[in-house]
Length: 240
Length: 339
Image (spheres, rainbow over the protein chains, first blue to last red):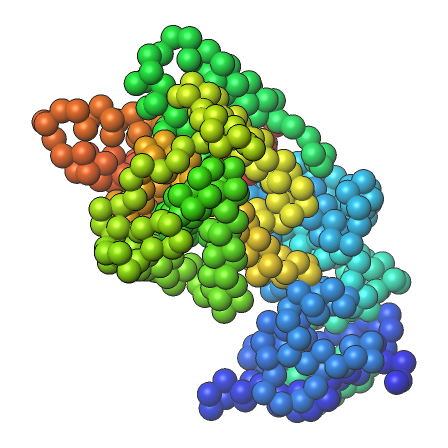
């Protein structure tokens, strides 16, 4: 098997008459940071749902660390090492921040080690001040970080981030970008984001999706100059 | 968060239960003691739904199916063997196994909450009709005649394990049932403090997130549902033992809705709530049953409505919330089991 961490082969999904994702071939190397952009409805979140087993592809394959995981159950895929921060933070609203991290770390660690991991992540993501707060009462930006920290505590090899900077202030966006770059030292990431400022801060390789298919895949600099990309996506935002 | 930490409220509750168990026989006459014995058995039943629904988030409308199975399993086994120890064990194992089987189809079939409620309710009503129609000599298991709607009378009551000739007197039976109640309460508290228990609570909060973290939601739900089934079965055996009698009403709609009312009144998401709710409603039922002013079911229905509308969280969580208004650190909603 090649050195690719993740590979999708002609991955497609159809909802009735709509083919939401069409023949996507995506290859991700170990510790790669890939940005996935595209207008609303391009199929980015649907692709994430297939990668995490929440949706079953109608055609194509997903290979992770050399093993075919197509159609595997969500919790088994998570155990193989794919973690996701969803678009709308998916948290346990009645539990504290620390409990989130503990619960995630506890799956693979004994209780004392899980507590230790939780403390490390609190420090790393900068959530120490709200460690004992229930997440239902936190602001949106903080909820994003809690979810990111929760995913990190499970130490997955590949982390999928669906709009990690959405709803954040300018400072928070910058901090999140820094955090993503830092996480990338030890983990591979695929980041879906609309905020082009944020994408510019973190991106090296960018994949552009449009109407369920990959439109183009290139470095950030060349993507910004690509006229087809501008037409379908950047143009609508006045160049970001 | 410290794994295995024991909440102070929990120790107090357990101590009060032990105190009641030891003190009551000194001050209450035999009739009162019999009443309290059945109250305690029903508290165990309330706990079984309290953990399945309140902690597991599984809307089981047919908890009486396991209660009834336990009662009948006890009756049939005790009649055949002429002793009670094995019968009680069978009364735990059979409903637990049935809960595991039913739960397997429900949870691995990915049924949503509403269907789960409908199915569990249907199952208990099917049992009700099935056992109701077992009148006649053809329906017997070994020496035990099921007797249809007339029920099975003169069941052997609890004896000292290993000595079928030595039956427990009412005071001893009360001690045993209270001990089992405390044991179930302690056991559930300990179970909820483990990783398994915490994941069960997390599943109630957000099922998808649990799966995305790598926890097998179906298996956790199945296991907590099975535990609930076994505990309800134990309660059923104690109930059958209390009256030395069992009839199909253990599976009835009235029975199953009573359990739901206990848990609603006492409060979801606590272990103490279902016990308190059960005691209040049982006391009311007994008191109202002795007068002719108003229909008991009608009053129960009114109380149920009043709680759903006015105190939707139930007594215990509402009182705890009231206490939490006074200054103190913001607390988590029970990943650590409360009182």
